[in-house]
Amino acid sequence: MHLVYRTPRLRSAQELAVECQEDCLWERPAHSALRVATKNLFDRLVALVAIVMAAPAMGLLAVMVRLSSPGPAIYSQLRIGYQGKLFYFYKFRSMYQDCEKTSGPVWAARNDSRITPLGRTLRMTYLDELPQLFNVLFGQMSLVGPRPERPEITAKLRREFPDGYYKRLLVKPGITGLAQIRQAADLQVEDVRHKLQYDLLYVRRMSLWLDVKLMLGTLTRILRHSQDERRSRRRSHTQRPMDNLPRLVLERNARFNREELINPSVHPVISEPMAYTTDVSIES
Image 1 (cartoon, helix red, strand yellow):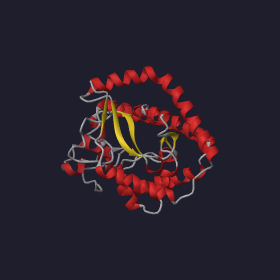
Image 2 (cartoon, helix red, strand yellow):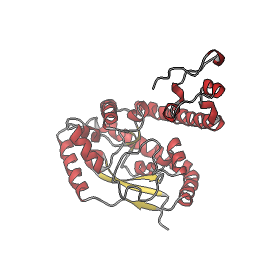
Image 3 (tube, helix red, strand yellow):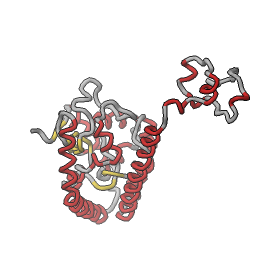
Image 4 (cartoon, one colour):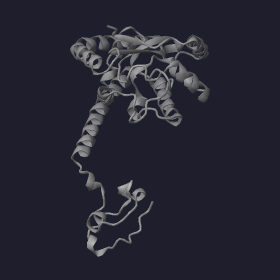
């Protein structure tokens, strides 16, 4: 039984890595060697403790992912890391196997059909990121830093932001970061522009104390996001289908056409429906 699935290595990935490394050579180190060494030691110690504590949960999740849909439990993907170095990035698989076989590499979207039912829960709670603790332990990633991107997407974003995107590679990529706390997942290039500003701000101000604050902020964000998701699901389950229609329609059986009823939220809610007739103007 295959536990880990690896995406095929692209021929151009190594060429892109060399270009990124050349970009970084022209930049001075973002921080002193002592600060970098302290951060690396802190990352590995925390990752080791977290792996030991989370081992039973990760084992259970691996079994659940393996049984929930065909494919391996852990997904390994090629990413661009510190100073342009290539490494394999681990996650619990949250999408169907070979879902990008026809579409190619694309960003995840809201209500993405490629995501499995269990994968939605894993993504909502960020539990799919737990295997990246091994990337931190191996020294490929940090607990906090800019998120690593795929070579295909990195190549596009380097062309889109030629003056600054490579500067994200001056520090190790992270499991979480300032951009992840301040902004939602990327859905378009404009989102990347905003996240890039946060990433570069972190590169300039990286410190152990900032990492601790961002990790606490990440926990707060996860809890808040999970609560919001539960509220929205509870609201959608308890709401009756007819509750979405305006009371004027319910009481008078007004003959609106289908197009006007697609978005019931545009209908005014009438407190005294008997005072009105069906000749109510509805904004489209």
